[in-house]
Length: 207
Image: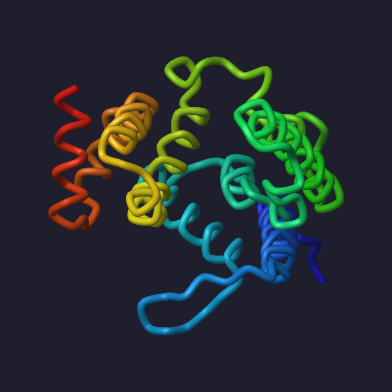
């Protein structure tokens, strides 16, 4: 019986890590309801959306970037925003602590799945967004930014629109647009939107 090739071993480690990430996502008590009426754990839904847009944005993405994309919000439900003080300082500390926690946990999964320390450190850095070049200098960082922005526009924009006034939404959209590459913006303009949402995007672009 022949030994597994290096390519087979690499595929095995990716599958192992991906499955473990999704296994954890499946434990999220928060649910998302699909148009069909089906519900699924929110983090499963979010990770699937991230993977979907990664495939569109960068079909040949590295394994490490793919796993960083899947693990962006790893076990986020365990540290709710309400566990930190109200206001911007509390929000920023929550975000910072979350990124460090998620990076450490996902990094541990990569190590146990057979990735080396350099690959693990890169994945952790992509999740934590620390020690990296700016997006315009690092293609993987830019892809990650594009994918996160696309998921926001496709999946969370309408919810935000209900909570904020027009001026606030135009500001959010302008900031989102500024983070994206030309390819990311092209994909964003292809997203299905209500007339109201498309009008807000237009105002953001005019600004």
